[in-house]
Length: 207
Image (cartoon, rainbow, N blue to C red; front, side, top):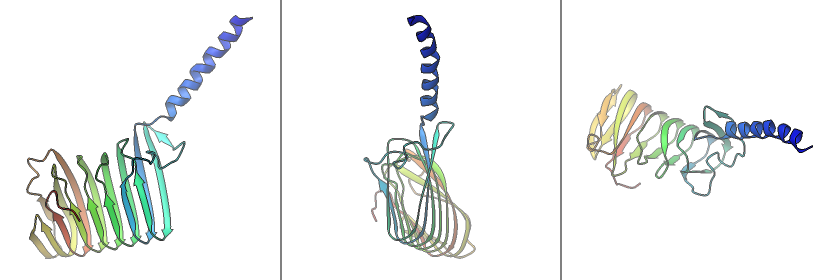
């Protein structure tokens, strides 16, 4: 009597194992959509990689997670446990994106109006920042260099490592922080900016 039962259980165990394997993920892709109000993003060791979602959609080993808030102050903690690609979509309000300590692999930020502070982590990645109106401050870690490619800059000024390197209207060009060539980690950002000052602070400076 035991033998037929065992023959039936073996395929069932394999099937369950396949389902569990299909649900695992090695990295996360997170989209934060915030309409109005201040936003703060920072590392949180207590948060799960999928923002607490038990069974996020998974494709090719990547978990896709999205969260949104319409109005009000929003503080979001991100887990440092898995590689992370982050997308931030903003309408109006200040944004503080403190990515220090996060294993970022990609970044896209779209902000319609409001000041944006971006603290880069000690990782190498490429990203895009699109900002219509407001100031943009970018802070570098000691071991991280920045290459900034300005594809669109309607009006304002660009300061890098404590000095103004461009100002006026219709600015374009590619600029590097002074430590870029020798930096252990290199971040490449494409910038599309409407109006307002942009400043890249020297490595190690804090906001």
